[in-house]
Image 1 (cartoon, rainbow over the protein chains, first blue to last red):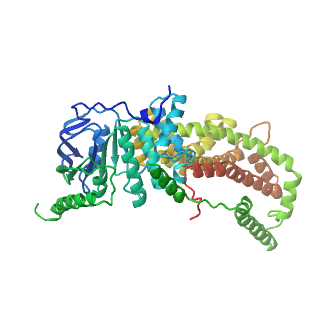
Image 2 (image 1 turned 120 degrees about the horizontal axis):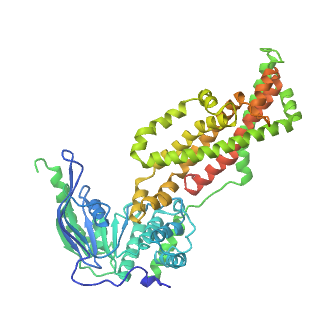
Length: 267
Length: 284
């Protein structure tokens, strides 16, 4: 069986009426009574198949908690969570590559854990390396790479799981602006080529507007859906464009207001 | 989109660290001369103490005769060292099996940890000779007793190395493993054990030091018929007031212990650290 990069990631997305991810009044409380923290409070939210959704919020809005729930790493305290869109893969702010494995080994491990046979693995690794433009670096170890390259390996490793839903937890937060800009472009291209459903968490408003079909603003402590913005700017977008800047100003004002509430006594 | 590809490739090349490695000879020399100097100073101090007349020369001989003794009896000493070394390696391998099993068990099971976790550290503070009376009762004065003492000396250090290694794994690596679908056993095999390797190697290094020390202590007391071992030789020479021979054997013990540590564990440790990116090869 051979596969080409195009058919690697996805079985064709089924654009039916069912959302890929659906949350209905989902709450998550960390810890026990007394020291309990309300991370998410009655969050209702649908993500359409193939949608690029950005979750935006200040610290303590439960963004990461939400991703963990969708990834199945954690269970909601109450409410209904449904992931219909298929397999999920999760990327973190740190690349979290295994330092004892090469670039190739890191990607291969994901395939091994999916019980893919060796000849099949070879081809898949080559296709994935092409996809993130890291051909020629397969023998390097993570510590020999730059931060941006590490994130691309992490992206390839996530794609190796053949997810239909890609969950990204501030994946470019620790990168310099130029690298981030290029990775935005790469991610946008990959997303539009494959039809992945992406849920992208960030605290960077411009990044959210640059990437998302829709931006959801979460309030902090407890995390609730505070506002929602459709982003109608045509793609490919540029982070320095006027359209992105204008919408960002608007969203930033609301985000500031959310944050301000916590600084005002008696609210 | 070829533009994106080229931008990325350009950035990748600029971002790659440029390793600057000094030549092999330069590195060898820079690590060798401090050691040679230390040895020279030690010999000098030794010679000065002898000259000072603090003890009679038949009790504390100067370096010269000791080294000539070492040279003349080299075959005997090498033979004894070989016997001891064989025992040491066997006992050490046994310690690895036992230590690693206990370490893995303690780090994976909350009950085991609560039960014996702190005891393992406690065992390390116990001088291994203190086990010897018990060992003699259990195994008689022979090879079994020697092994017992070696294992009691080395296994806790090895177990501790593994436990520390597992405890200090970055949580994000464990999460990454879980996200990739690693279950209990596959997580242990593909994530937990490899992640704990640097610390485990540290435990092995320490374990060898304990094993060698315990072994020599045991050999001073236990006599096994057949080949003469280093510890036994030391014991015999003390009985015969052969202080020159005694010092020569002591040097052999020291050199063998250090050589194994450097050649085996030093090399292993460096290889692992380099592989894991724990050495700053760019030099800054």
